[in-house]
Amino acid sequence: MIEQREPVATVGFINEYCQAYRHLFEDVRSFEQFKFLHVGLLSGLARKTLPAIAQLVGLQNAQSLHHFLRGGVWSVEQLRAVRLSLIAHTVGERRIGLCLDETGDVKKGQATDYVAKQYIGNIGRLSNGIVSVNA
Image 1: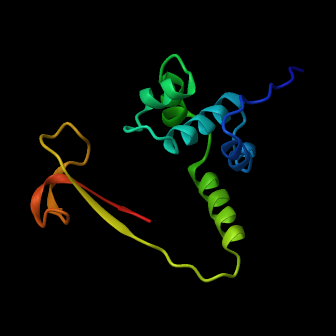
Image 2: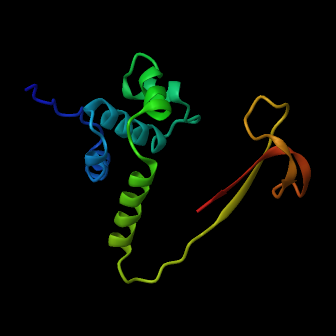
């Protein structure tokens, strides 16, 4: 039997947080990609693209991150369940407020996915753009 290696360490608090999800990934490489994405998303990168994240965490290219997202063996539903469980445990019985933010960004052309003519609140009119709602 081949002994599985330990995943590459990243930033301390990311290692600690991601450990709660470790059981969702059969392959140590998938778990590492999961951690690398967290490092990139929480970093100060201006554009959080896969190539930029790959460069930040020391990967040769973004291929392994792409394969993790596109064809990795893991379940979104299971990941979501663990995340909600962690949130419920952290919040406990305390009352909380949830802040929703609708952000609109004007875009030219159609090169970016989901660009369409829609109401963009920060300019107060219809325009080509992307609107996202974040909590």
